[in-house]
Image 1 (cartoon, rainbow, N blue to C red):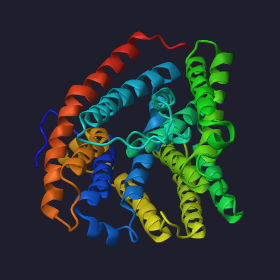
Image 2: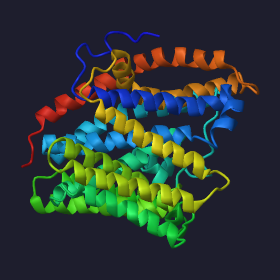
Image 3: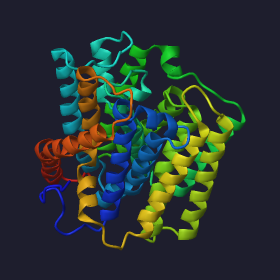
Length: 406
């Protein structure tokens, strides 16, 4: 199908290759989730060989690692960075959360089981975007990746405030090696271990309070408060990711390492570091990730071969995109990248309605799979125009009004 011209940039931007990668990753994630409904037989054959979900999110994480720290450093201001992030992420996030609550209330889709947690704790945890790391089930499964994105933001701000942001490669290598060592040493933690230890409600209260203090202080005009806020946010991320995630300890660390690998590549591309250093970083991160997955072995919900293949293909995809960054990118791909956030968040709501009203197909039905995309993409164009784009515009206007505190 053709995307509307208002969604496709007339002159492809300098980072059009990143938009293309985002668009591809979003479509693969949709395939992963929609295959439950329309291509179950195909999914059962594919997943042990190629984990499509991990492929898509690893591409997303590499892209975020490449662009997010650059956004902060280009602004040179933590305050405007957080304003940009808030208005980029929250408007569509809020719209999608309201949508899933509405369809659940109307009885045309069922919300996920929240494990008996109170509405207050679930609400607060989700507002922080750290719900995946606070022992709270996600209202939508795909929201779990936003928790790791938020942890990455906190770490990036921490490094920026203490002037260590140029050490992206060292951070990536350290996290990757820690992941490999944890597996080799047999260190395992129960999912949401910290929540079980101190209590979910207390942890949510402490973490949300620390998050607000960290963001406010890091955005202040006082150098001492900026450092305090940045460090507090970084500590919060480094505590929650390894000790309270629902993915294995090693994978949580690898996710962060992958994002900092993306940053290391950006630094090499900008001449802030050497390509040789970035390549060595990539080798270490990939080796530690593959080695960790291999040693972790197969489990009830984890097939190491499928994870390793997906991870390697994600890194290869990013590498091909990087190598082709000066080539012309088809406008359709840049358009898909533009609406990729909508595609990522809207499709599970749409699928929830379909599963509740029509049920899942027992046999593969490629026609329904294609039809799903044909309806989803125009819907996402609409959410981009009506929710995402206005939100980003408001964020830019507010950021322009805010004077940098230094």
